[in-house]
Length: 260
Image (cartoon, rainbow, N blue to C red; front, side, top):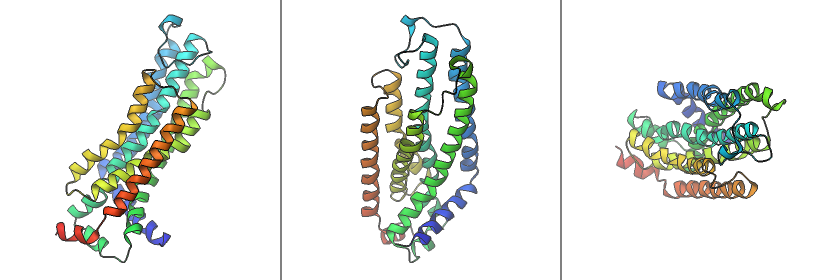
């Protein structure tokens, strides 16, 4: 296995993605949405509104704080879970295109005919979607931290973010979600022959992150260590299983024959 070959495939995919307007617009619009729109819409009404009653606190409110601080802290931590949805959404547009889009543009056959091994090709495809997705997530998180701290500093008297939970979400769980999403999308993209079908099926990768978000919003699970550990283990095992399945079922000869 040669890293230079893997990076060449990844670099080619990233360059190809930049040439598609719908992908490029998404990579620009998503950081603005997550760093400005979401914190403003979710936090500003709570920070500037009336002091909530202790009997009216939502299930995700943080204990041990004043009612307003509890709601704001809970809202921030709940919003952080959107950074698990973000790295699942972005790869669905990039990774789903990897094989099917090249087939439509008649760029797949020359790539499959190269001396790359199947493992090098798959790793390159995964890396080509993983790198831009993580960069956009990190950029969105930086803007989110700045916006949140500007909004909440008068309430807490100190910067609220980054805290341990936010660093875990962005530094550990976002890459795991991204790897899960990319592995699923590459697997799907290598098996179907229509770009829209690949993107629609690839959107299923958002379900684990969305489930955790909804369960936390409803107060069914809390963001304590056991929940995060279990979620991380599930994601890690699922990502490893999807990559193993993609590697085991990828047959370039079958793709060349079936798609001619």
